[in-house]
Image 1: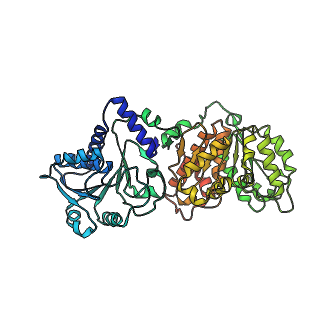
Image 2: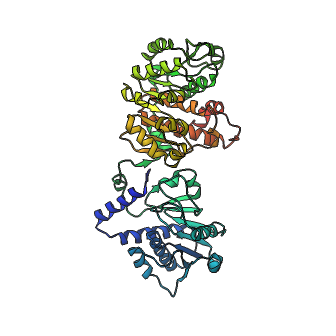
Length: 509
């Protein structure tokens, strides 16, 4: 499903208007009627307070009010900022019947319009649209607070007032909707935490804009997958097959201090279906790692006195690369002269798809341009802190607009970026931007990323593209947590719990 930015939505509207030879006023009528139809389908005739701003979103509200009133609802309108200013909204305002519809003005005191809240069973909020930026003033903030504490069912049109639809955070007060009716398509804020929590249940109002017009509205269309779509892109498992059919993942991970990274990444690779997995790790970690892994092939590597990979490990890794169909490096390796040598040689010499995670990313953050000379397709899997070191932006900047950050880095270095957070983003040159919709706080623990990296390299080993493998792995990783925590505490869930539970919680895949 496509997710549009505010500018892309405006372009999609323009394409629709040009294709059909209609006016923007016609499109506003469609939007308001479609919203009214959704409200009518969910509520029998009752008292409705429609709160309208002075722009186009307010115009949608006037259309909603008219259609609800015609259907027998008792409708009152509250003008949040005086009479409408937008031309089409002025026209829709003029079509209201002042005899049937009471129109009130909110000046500066919520107490002056309290009776309208008391009479309402539901509130339809149409104060700001997708063009809103910044923060609402104190006067409107007080109104938003009254809406939020009304105890009534609140519908917001397109986006709850006070939210920038292109951002994942708010700068000030906003409406907390029970239902948000997205006009034509989902917007960025509808699916991005934490602001998505303010949107409540999402309904999409069809106003006749086609999928082609959504796609034609911008080059970097944002999308997210559902379960059936992910099932459709996973590699097939033919009945006539052998372990060689499903690829060979080489995981170069772990150290004496971080043995779990080698274990979890290997388990993730095995669980997602790679035919063979080789776990390569410092030889001093062999007793601990070998006792926890029975499926993968084990490749102990030369290490230094502290148990980190030594530079000489590159020779053994070079031989192993000849058999690998995908490679993962960096989980728990540490940052030492030896690991730096291994990672740099790997990037320059690897020809199979390569996943760079954790310490591999910290190593290349000193010189990200090393990615530009790679012979292979690369997936980088940074969390916001690692992304900050890679691109030089603050964590706060990255979290405000992770799509922009990930997309810029992906294009600059011709790599796939899986930027991990509560809103994991996957970007690759020439591909749509993917925002993951699964996962919960059970994943906010050390080792979770190692499991995800292993799942990603497994899908790459089986022949998926870097973009598709990253999207599918992120989705399945989050879905496993969502399903597991239906019967287990998210607080107490560990990455190894999810690794062991993958066959049962993802059994229908």
